[in-house]
Length: 194
Image (tube, rainbow, N blue to C red; front, side, top):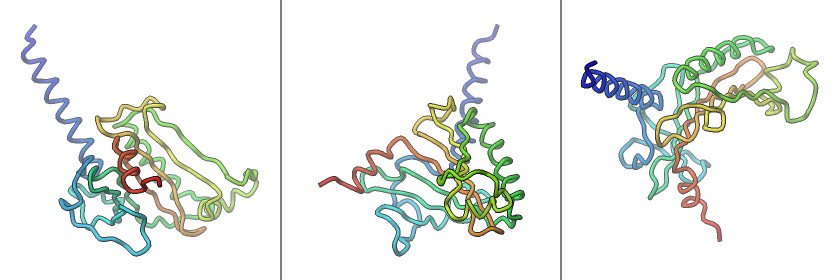
């Protein structure tokens, strides 16, 4: 058996996996200094939260990118906000795209935890207004990949979260978040306790 060939193959496979993961986090990595990327501070946004004017590896399903930065920790969180998805009030179209994106991410990260619940505790008797409940903030629909779910995440990545959102009972959208391992240090720096 040629162990040298096997070692090269394993090395190349590792490089390809690392590249795919980096590309899916829009080409951005933990600790990226804010000065290394074009950003703008939107009025009313929280401390450290900036809109990214461009990302190295954009995804055509998402149109707006946000990042949380601190001076010492650099980039600690990314959120991509998806395109508007016209849908019926049952959320058929946005749910289909959510399922498709979940499958894509599951191929990279493996097992996830799924969430679909109502904060008010109401029954689902009003499923004809499903998207309205999402828009009102009463229904939460998400899939989260982290170590507690058994996901396989690359080094420095704490979690990946896909969330189904809605602007109204006729328009939904997806958001995709990457949380890096430096998030706690970043938030302590941004929001010091007195």
